[in-house]
Image (cartoon, rainbow, N blue to C red; front, side, top):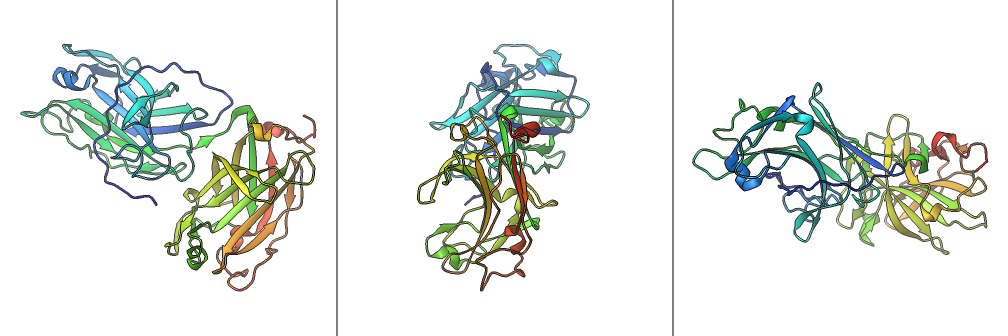
Length: 419
């Protein structure tokens, strides 16, 4: 369960330049920060006394709480990762120097480890749009951000170091609320904290640590190796019901309300080998019925299938939810070793599951077998094993009423049946 905490001063990092390679075939996270203003130039060593303590003038970050648990990771934010932009470090004693904004910034990716943030080898790409007052941060997630999913929490922070009158050097800061992938948020202007004389709203640096909007972005693609698994259902609500029947989870202490599953018989031998599964947020034995935004309540993963049909978790996968079209789309890396034998002769099925009643009764809707690159249609209101608490009149019935689906590669690959 996510336990919220009031945001505190941005964690300050010792930045080093990262030179690690990026891959054009991996998932990418792109996040954007919008400020009250971004100048064409930045003054370095703006406050030499503050430089003596901190070594830099300004710092911006996207803090990523991968497991959505504020009790793990960095104590003030729960973040396991920090994507950091910083002005070029200065050495005391120094004098103010004006440089072009584009030449004043360095980037880095940090991971919480052993009670502190440690710099990693990943490259964080930065695009600054002075006209739009934005910084856009992007990175290849194949080597970092392990476990990032639609339920992860992200927030933006900004800080400017200075020495207050008759006080020790500190940092004025602005922290946004937490949000999740695909859900941009706004932040009030003029709400920079820990800003006392000589820091004020009139300070030249104040507007560019004054965050007014934060778009956490989303995970996009595995480049030329992207496979997309689409589930089309009768409809999806904007807010989905969770812990619909509390007694259904009280007996074993865990479970999910709804599952969308694609199973793959890779070698066409009559048994399934791999599964791609999307599910609503797991509930515990003490849960109570509630609703949450559908787009942030669905996560996905790659699984192996045991001989008895059990699933063994392998890794998280990016998932997107389109409420308007009733579509859930999961992306998987085509070059994952588990999918190495996937071909046009492999057999796929899709299935939805809805849990209800005290004994974990499962309502199911399944597709016919289909091939990679093809699609299927399924009749409406044909959910099976649906009795008692399950009926077509239940508000959650349409989200398990599978009406179609497809699995395809980029640019229509596999559609011709050729490899």
